[in-house]
Amino acid sequence: MREFSEISKEPGFKKFLYTPSGTLYMIMDGSGYPELMIRHFDGDIPIEYIGPYCEIIQATRKWIEKYPQLDELIRVELITEIGRDFIVRPFHVYQVSTDSYVNWDNPPDPPQELQKMRSAFEAITGTSQNKRDQILEAVLARNILEPSYKTYFDEASRIFIIIEPRISHSDIENWLSMPR
Image (spheres, rainbow, N blue to C red):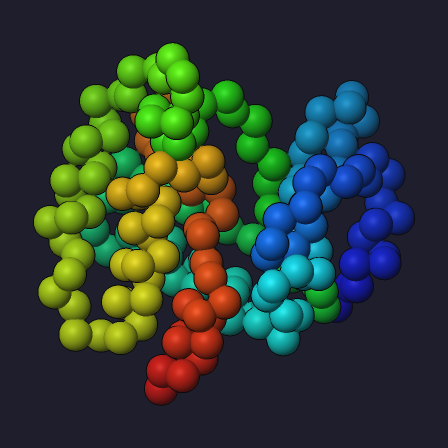
């Protein structure tokens, strides 16, 4: 398992921005285009939580796949590498996120799929007795029902892509407290 000090030596490695969950970096391809996003866990989420953090991301993807009405509208991006103190995922380039529809001075019109996705999600959620599903629903709600700069509509595939679910420290602690 690699450490951040190792991946930071990769060709094209550059700092992107600081977030409370950990600093983001990118690796550029040979033509100078961002290819990979790295989250270094040097923020609020301790490195001991990387495993459960990644489990939650994987579980959100599987949860969506259980519901065809959501699976046709949403894709959660998966982690491609888990290091001792970092994770790697594909880098996405986009200009408009679901946050843009409400928080810009002159917001773009949202695609018709936005309301369809939100309505389908609301129809499915809120009745689960499974505690882990309740955590996943809360995590996904932050990317589906709330404006999120980590969720965007891909015009080519006509689906929303959740680049990285908004997972809190308490989500991870609750996840860990649940029996397997």
